[in-house]
Image (tube, rainbow, N blue to C red; front, side):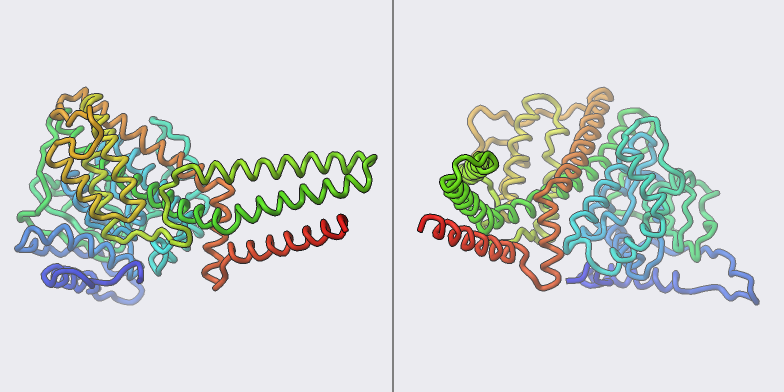
Amino acid sequence: MPDLQCLMDFAPDIATTVEAWLRHFAERPASRGTVAPAPTLREIPAPADPSVTVPALAALAAEALARDRTLWIVSADDALLPDLSNALDLHLRPLCLVLPAAEYAGRIALRATFSLLKSRLARDAQDSAGPAWAAMRERLRHADTLWRACLAWSARGLDREAPPAGIAGLFPVRIGPWALAERLAAPADWVMLIQSAALPPAQRTAWPGALCTLMLGGGPISGGTGIALIDESARLRAELEVLGQELAEMELELATAQGELAAFTERYHALIAGRMAELDRVQADLAKARMRHAPDDPALDAAVREAQARAEQSQRERRAYAERESGAAAAGERFAPSNDLKKRFRQLAQKIHPDRASDEADRAWRTQLMSEANRAYREGDALALDEVLSLWLEGRQGELPAGTVPPAPTSSGAETLAAEVARIRQRIAAIAGELDRLYGSRLYELFAAARVAERQGRDLLEEMAARIDAQIEQAKAELDALEA
């Protein structure tokens, strides 16, 4: 299945809306000679049905990526960002930069997006395949110096360090409020202005460098809260909506990467670990047999000790893995969660995440729900995810262990909200670190190599197993010859 399908699976009214927008973007003003056409501005009405706007904007982002166009979706404030981020295609979400207006929250969201993009590129799975991802890899290749500078900036995580200039230009689709778009000054082929009373008149014009600017006329927009950020608590609540979405995206990415590696680990132990333990045992026996034929050879004595230690270690590792409850897929099964399962997990993580707790009792309850959600996702159990959501909505213990306390009402005080922002920031940074460690492990390197081999029609683990079997047979033959 391709990573994007232009206007497929959309409701007819959404498809009609996007098709109309695309016709406007495709129209080019006439130019004379070598003079480039002047930027154009067209004001168009908002969809009559307010529920159409957000999914249509998400579909427009997919179309921009399909046509290799850059796009700015510029809003008056942050109110639409969480709903729009949720509406974006899961495969394409890391290619879209969604940033709130507040500089502090924006840097958190920016680092999260970089980690998400970096992870998806490292995993190199089906959810980072297709023309849009190929174009992104080419874009990053051409902007390698900037990309590396941005990754280094993100890794340092310094609060007061501004991101490298031109950072927004790495992303083909950018979504954010006008103040941020103006500050970043990243040119785009297409610009969609979401008009409201809060959008300054100076911004209701053709944007410099854009082929076409569309301004969505005033009208109801589903999902927008129209929050006027007049106090600290309101501002923090708006930030939390955006950062909570970023956190859910990161939790989904981590759970997916862990699930893929766990399924591979299960197959690795089924095919390779036992054979390696057997090979180590036979080689230890062979070293002992050689030692019996030359008992005064110090080199053989050292070889015996080394082979015996290796055999004992491999046996311990095999037993430890067998005794540990991995929770991974059965041997030979690939972890390939559906889009629907991913969406359910992401939406659930937004609601129940422990870092959004109001107190310790609430945190303990959320932690158990989150643990159950992770287990259900790893096992591909959509019904279990629905059960966790039901427990959350009903605010009861259900099947959770005795003594668990349902959540207390969330405080809206500025101090509580600021603490929640800080916890979310710390968790996003922690997930980024976990992903880096995961991708730096030797097992993941083997997993990545196996994935490359699979695309070539080969099974790397089966090839390894065959080589080990041959080594075992050769070692046994040498042992038999020595003991004959």
